[in-house]
Image 1 (cartoon, rainbow, N blue to C red):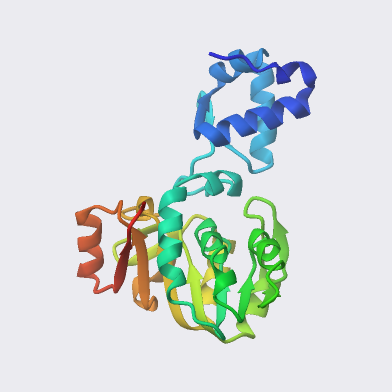
Image 2 (cartoon, rainbow, N blue to C red):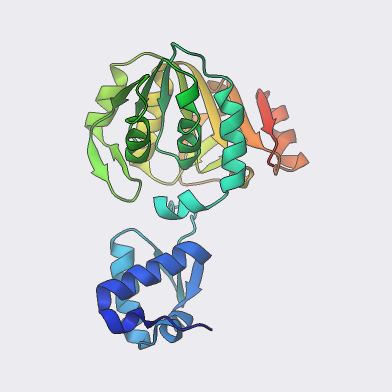
Length: 263
């Protein structure tokens, strides 16, 4: 195992290095981290406690993970790195639904961020979002009228949430809403966190048409909270990594879906 000398540069540098490593590989054992960064197991556990407090990673017995579970969503930094090819394929397919002059709402998912990167060529547009990354991206597009949804900033998701955000969404009526969720199963979409669910539901209620963007890893999974039934979506777009059984379940629930080809 290659050693990292950040442990000699102080706890903040070491924690940043540990976070970068875990976000890159997904999960790591505490013993392996102690060896890699040249510190004691007790020191590593203190570092992991602090990183967990910041919402960057999640501890489990004997190690730490950046990967999601049915109760915890992964940090946005991890989500930005995962399933990139699938998300790009889904986003490219979704972009074909957007026409100049539309008003489009995007949630705080990294899949809709991939879509946002493609909207500069489909202008003029009005785009509404609560995702800071998308806001910063589209602020540079001169023919995009950008509406940033306010609320309480949540560092884990890099987005604005809460009652103020829901109230702002409820005052709008948009042509198209694109959202992603953590899990899809048995005719429902799911997410791990209640305050995210309330924002996504408000977005879905504010739109004339709703489109669900998901990579294949979300199919056949559940999370703690139901977001909405698949029937509220006019279309589902998933990448071609979805297996036949997962697509058959969408057929059984009479869901209109498209499969995006990953290159």
